[in-house]
Amino acid sequence: MPDGWWCRLSIVQAELRRLSILILILRFAAFCFSLAATVFMASNSSRSHDSHSWLHFPTSRHVLSSNSIVTVYSLFEICTTVREILKS
Image 1 (cartoon, helix red, strand yellow):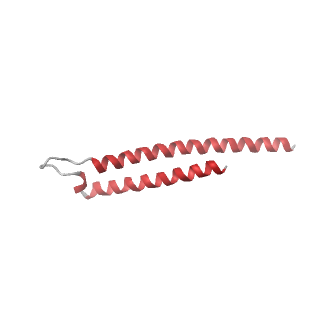
Image 2: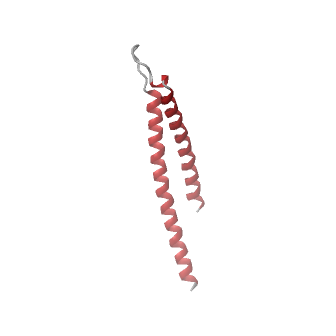
Image 3: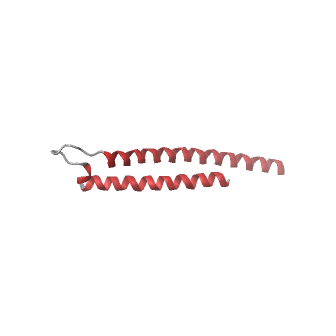
């Protein structure tokens, strides 16, 4: 019965690899959205003299810093997932 054991093990490994690839795709999507939000928040400034930039408000600076942290964390998680996929 060793053949059945090995076959089940390879099926489980293939399923785990597929799950890891799905997680990688979702983490990459999260990274893209958080990077887009960070770039949008950082670059959206008003050029007129009457209105203020978003960065003049403490809440907007907090959101910008939160988006930056999420972007860096998402990149770290992508690297971790790629390492996990390559290791298995």
